[in-house]
Image 1 (cartoon, rainbow, N blue to C red):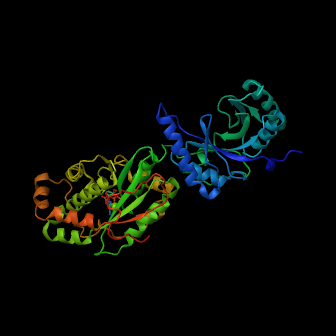
Image 2 (image 1 turned 180 degrees about the horizontal axis):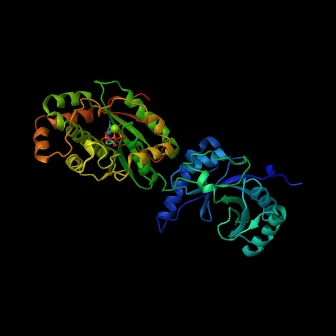
Image 3 (image 1 turned 135 degrees about the vertical axis):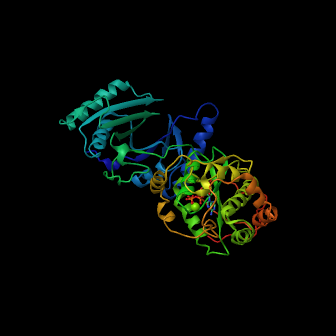
Length: 437
Ligand code: ATP
Ligand code: MG
């Protein structure tokens, strides 16, 4: 009598082929494999390896769990995760597993078998396998319909190097399972099923960016977006210390911990700028203060970006959302820097950003109100369409260069271990104080 528990369950990861052409392909796969190894280390997995267009994740002396599959689905570069049972290429094993897999997917009316073969000496043709395994399924599920086009369930039988992997993928599964699903993934613990992954590219394949991170809803989502595209993220946070409490510095660290599953953050820089803001507030007209604060923030961020070797700045700005995010004001702040500034949320509505924050897990932290440099010395009527000449006059009314130098000198940082590709800069290894986590 065959027992499902005597078969090993593994994870087969599928990745998009985009960006995998030519020389990049090997680099992409090696990076994805290393990132997975790091993200899943608590599951005691073997080094993930490439097999026939997939990455195979095996647990040392054990079976892969649903929890492991869910974690794997959050690693950038993973498009889908299939929990699969592994067996020898015998018809008996394949049929038994196909029936077991289909009996654990929950409700369905129609199904088909999809056999696939590569680098294998197995005697059967894939069409033959489809029929032979399909017959066993028809016998076991006489009330279900075989349907070639868009069935509810597809039972995959993938033979690679004479090892067979059997798993199911569900049409409805794409709506209820995997990364970002609001509903819980309600299937049998022993199911062998496909979940949706986060997609994107492995972190470490797109260089380094400096993310201007507040603890609001927007910038954590912007950080996640560029991290998902393969960027190593180095956030910088400006707090209102010593004029306001340092709560925002801790919330920003909580945001980074919430981003841990995606493994995209290396180090957080914290720049206390309360004193500088106070000085600016004494000399700059109310309506132009935010613009001057933001010019300082951009200048400091770019200086740290150069030290880090980061090649772009990233913000969570969305056009017209608040006074500082009108086209005129974005332009007059942007002139402070020469690095490209990425604004992945520029065309997003607040509702969309909040929904995304819920999916990625930063929403709860961002809900906590806290003063940071943005709330400090806030004018009642900020300028929404600043004239460059007026901004330049205000800007020249204080010693901005000395302020920028002093802020860069006073910057603090804390390192995170979630991103294996992050390399700290050699220069300034001995930055003043190290922020306590
Ligand atoms: P968020 O929800 O990201 O705080 P917001 O709607 O509050 O954005 P602004 O305060 O105008 O908008 O900030 C626009 C962008 O400037 C933020 O998305 C972020 O990239 C950057 N930013 C704002 N405050 C800070 C801060 N205290 N430290 C670092 N960057 C900041
Ligand atoms: Mg904000």
